Image (cartoon, rainbow, N blue to C red; front, side, top):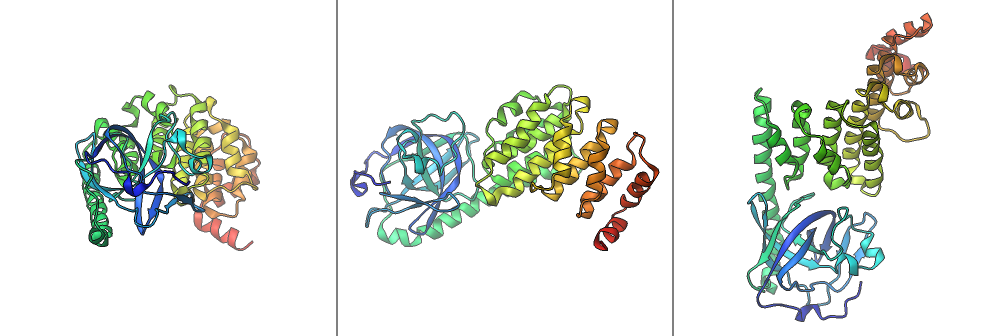
Length: 384
């Protein structure tokens, strides 16, 4: 991505102020520094070009290659809507989304409907998977790090990222602590935590939501699943809980959209595959609460498909969901699931089959009762 301007001369002595719009998941590496990619709208001043070329590696992360002597990070401050403020360093500025070449644009995962005039910039000093959806990035003057400053910049950025992590864990403890002591976490606290910048806080909020899911409005979660990027997995997982808690008010199509959409969105982010699985597990469990409207074929496919790669947890969730559907569950799919080579899957299917109200041959029912015990299932499967 060659740039025609001289990055080393592109400075504004008045500094800059930007409105932060959202955050992306891929990382940016340059001169030994790692930075988070955020999207901003310039409000005042100018953003310097501090890189002349960018390469994309196999995991879709970007590597900046500044011209010799042009790398000059700028001290800045990130202030979020919640009022928290963090020292950061502006490591790079990329072209606007509209001005990017296709290969570079394809490496990023901007949120849906983001303004094409948004400018991707790289901030150092933030932890992995940090996400902010609003705020300001400011630099009071065009102060640059000197050559001697660069020698300690890496350590300073690491310390800053660790401080953000510590503060995030403190908020996480404040959210989950009352729940562990039997106190009720309010729906307002959960919703606020889903927008937290700290990754573990967002994930924890989805867990804590289970106790208040039936009291939460549906509309924000229907809107949230339009953004199925891995960095939005907290909202997506919470949506599965909420949809399952409102089976009469949510369409089965919304659950299927969530289940299928997170698979498509997560295809190239292999490091986040475990979060995709957790979202899909909750979506499958929720399907089991939809009664006659449940997508039975999708559940049976997740349990029995031999050519697709399904996580064991997904297959178990599908079997449990079919069991909750009672007579609506196809007996044939449960019989196939009971013969799965993974004991956990076989047990989940066998337990659903053992209580199925349909007329089932005595030998099948007897085997289902036998395979409902995990020890017996393991012995039978491992002796095959």
